[in-house]
Structure formats: C-alpha cells, structure tokens
Image 1 (cartoon, one colour):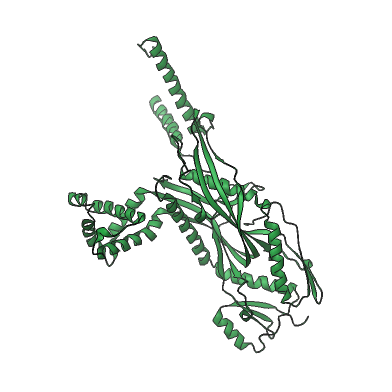
Image 2 (cartoon, rainbow over the protein chains, first blue to last red):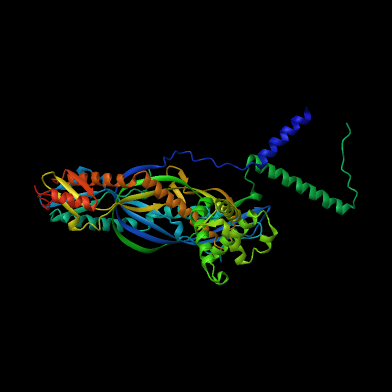
Length: 197
Length: 328
C-alpha cells in the first residue's frame, strides 16, 4: 500500500515537474469577430522607422553571454478625428459664416506591419546555451510596439493632424458657400487614444 | 531498521570532489523541482529580454482624405499546414510540370524554395515507395525523380496520397501555428469625389454619391490591445505550437512572414464575409446625413450607389444638379 501511495506521489510530482506552464488568458474580455460602425475622418498618415535592438540575458548559476537581436521596422500611424463626436452645440451657423469646434485629434489606425520588419541576421546572434527563439523575437517586437505606443504624444502627430483636418474641412465647407470658416479643436486626451471598443 | 550509508573508498581529495559534486547535483535537482512545480523565479535560472532604447525617425508624411466608416475586430489562426497546402503544393505542381516539359530538366535553375520543394518531394517518393532501394539509390537523379513522380502526377495535379506525404515532409522540416488578433477598416476615400460623382435630387431631398467602398487597413500588430491605463494587454500574435523553428535557418523569416500574411488575409476575408462593406456603406450614409443635418442642409437622405445605379438615379431625378443647400 505504501508503495502505491509513494508511486502516486512521485507520479504527481513528476507530472507537475514536466508540465508546461499554461498561459492564463487575459482577465479582460475582448469581444472579437464583430463589426463596428465608425465615422472617423483620417487626414494624415505618418511613417516612422524604428530599430528594434534587444538582448537576451540568461543565467544558469553564472551569467551567460548575452544573445542579441536586431531588426529594422516601420510604424504607420493614421490620425484624424471622430466625426460621430461632433455635437450640434459645437457648430455656430450664420448665413455666410460657420464656426466649428472639432473633437480631439486621435489615432485612427496604428499599424506595426510585420511585412516591414527586417531582421538583421548578421547582428542577431545566438550564444552557447542562450539562443534567440521565435517566442523571444515576438516578445522583442511586443516590447518595441509598447515603446512606440508610449511615445505617441511626442511625435508631433497632433499638430500636423489638426492642420490637415482644418484644410480638408475648409475645402469641403467652402462648397457649402460659407465665406468665413473658423475651425478649432477640443484638447486631445493624454495619451492620444486608439479606441478598440 | 539499519541506516544505509554510502561508502566512498577514495582518497581524501577525490572524496571531497565527489561529495561536492553530489551536493551541487542535489541542489540543482531541488532548485529545478522548485522552479518546475512552484514556478519560483530563481535568480540563477533567470532569463530576461531587454530592449535597448532607440528613437523613432520620421520617414514620411502623407495627406489623406479617408472616411473610415466600419471596423472589424477578429481572431484567426494561421498554420504552416494551411500555408503549405494553399501555396507550396500548387508551387510543387507547377514546378513538376515545368521540369517534366523541359528538354533538359537538369539545366533548369531552381530557387531556394523550389529546391526545398524538390527535397520534400524526394522524401515523399521514398516513403511512397515503401523505402524501395531502387527509388532510394536514384533519388538524386532528377530524371529518375520525375519518372517516379509521373504516375502520381495526373492532369497536372499530385495524387492525394503523394500530396499528403509532401505535406508531411514539409511540416517535418518546420511547423508553426499562430493565433492572431487584429482589425480591418473600411470606408471611402473622399479624394476621388469629383463633381460628376454626386448629385442632389430636391424632390426627394436625397444626395446621391457614386463611391466605391475600400478596405483601408488590415492589421495585426504585436499588441492587439495595449492599454496601460486600464492594465489591459492582449497580444496580437500568439504562437500556438512550433516544431523545428530555428531562427538561424535560411528563409525562416520569410516563412514566418508568410504564415502571418495568411492570418492577415484570413482576417480580411472574415471581415468581408461578416459584411464590412455593407456596414461601411450604411454607416457612411448615416454619418453624412448627420453631418449635413448639423449644417442645416436640405438633404434628408444620403445614398451611396455603384456606377450603374447612380446613373439610373440621375436619369430618374429630373432636377438633379441643384445645389445641396438651397434654402440658405
């Protein structure tokens, strides 16, 4: 009997030792595979270059030599305004003039296209017992993506988007025979938003 | 019960080394068990990924006039099996056809991808022949390979059995499956809206527009949701499984990109199947109606039509061409 119990304990320990850790799914529920209506006016697209340079540090009692990862990538950010957020109270109409207060500038599309990520094999180097795996590559790209998103406010997106949106709407409103067109904006939230839900 | 002792009959120094080795070995096992069972983060086994600070350099600014009126958020799976079935097998069939029709197949130049396909075909033919020594001995002779393949290649298509074996060989070399989450955006470009592409019909108070709905973007980013404020993070690409993916292999990055591209294509197909184009049209009509209403326009209805229907409506409405805002 003792042997059976011992065997069971060892089996359980063995199984838990060799089990792969299961990634817990995100706590927040994301509704996927759904359509959503939108009304966003995209007026400018920015393309940025980003070098993804990372190192994998590994310790097996002692610190092993760092493996390195290098890739060249591009980020495309489309910005504009959400037309659905314009309220009647934001528009002052007179026979020949109009004053519009537009919703804040927001990121309409944020794209970090994998097609434009070029890994540099010369500087992406494995080391003894420390190799760059495909999971590491994906993690480096996520780190780079997070880094870019954190700097969205400092890229001069807002000013340029305001100018472009103003120019486009002035052109459109002129077709409605307005002679004086005055456009201004609500302040953008910090950080610049990218709504998903 | 007698206690058991391990007797080490060695000289003092050797015994010390052995004892030290046993202690270290035991320690490693204990630490590995701690890490394996309790997932305790141990400083001596730690692996960390660090991103070095690099700046973002502006490359280009482009003026847009896009009205995004529908978005689709979806989740798809892209697998190497699917990629090989859809792309590599047809490539293998065209390659075989080319080589079989060639006067001198040996002189045909093969790309790196085609060489891989030929290697998979060789493996498949050996397996299909039940490891026949005749096939094995002649497998590097291209003419023999084509002769072995000929009975399995009817109407320019590989037989299902050989196709499955080729797939098996390709997957044995490398296999990966991704779960991907991303979004698709559709709407209209206002840049192409020329004067002859819209008219107002005063009798029905309808503004007719002739515009084609476009898919502006279909993107899967490393992060699908990255919302630090709400502590909400959802990955864009997640690896479901992988076999033999070595980043030092030639062509591996293109292979991974191809699988990701397949995910992106699926996402766009799903969006179209779910009706993103119809949603974009309806949403654009509502948006324009609301905007025109706020500008005190006479327009009550906006209709976006395809070219033929647009021309038809133009003929039906006798007063087409009047200004959109007549009362002001």
